Image (cartoon, rainbow, N blue to C red; front, side, top):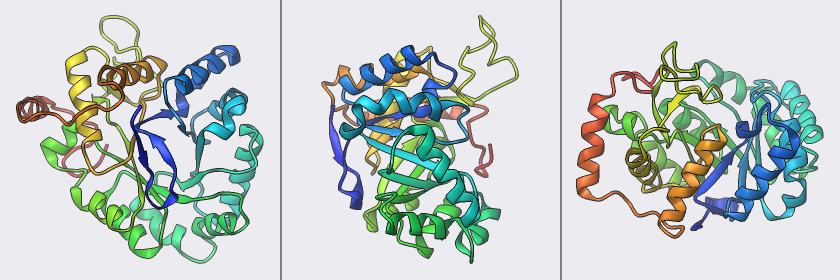
Length: 297
């Protein structure tokens, strides 16, 4: 698998990463095998969060044999220093590690910015943890352009995890190039999410069978039923100015993404001009993209 340098972290990571929710509610032996398979196929960046159910408890033992060969990223959804430090300590325990390669403020919303950056905010916890060697790099995750830019302007973060989705980008330009451009100027590691997302879910999508997608761990409808679209969508994401794309939260989608990477001998090319035209046409037909024209979901 092609590897790219994750910005100022210096980590050399594969272009397709492991979304930790993949192993949520999975028997331990099965999870161990899924992780081993991913590592064997070139995955060396794993991303997880406390909000992903019991994923940390399962992922910890599964990655233990591979820990020194992979990069492990975790997150805190807490907004104050003390709460974030407590969540960090619990993640260490559950994931059976004594350091994180990347630790991130998770899903920052516009109303959270002043709190996380202010006195006693979560940023203080991340800085303290990095100073003590508990985490090697610190980052941010958000779905909002304005939040990403405000946080980057306020502090020298190491990484950014951000949506880069074909339908949203081509229909609304929601994942604006300005965010990735600014992150690149700062030599931040740029990590994409939602690369294999199709559209927002409707009430029937979590049901098994013809009316549903049967992917309850994905909060959006993944592109599971159109191999050509999935191929172009993932290559579109990876053709932007970023380093890796995190898999959707289902082992079948993890394997689909890996099969696309493998198809191109590890280095998927950017979509051609004709493929971009087709993606734009398909994007305009998506009535309920994962984010609407305002960036809401």
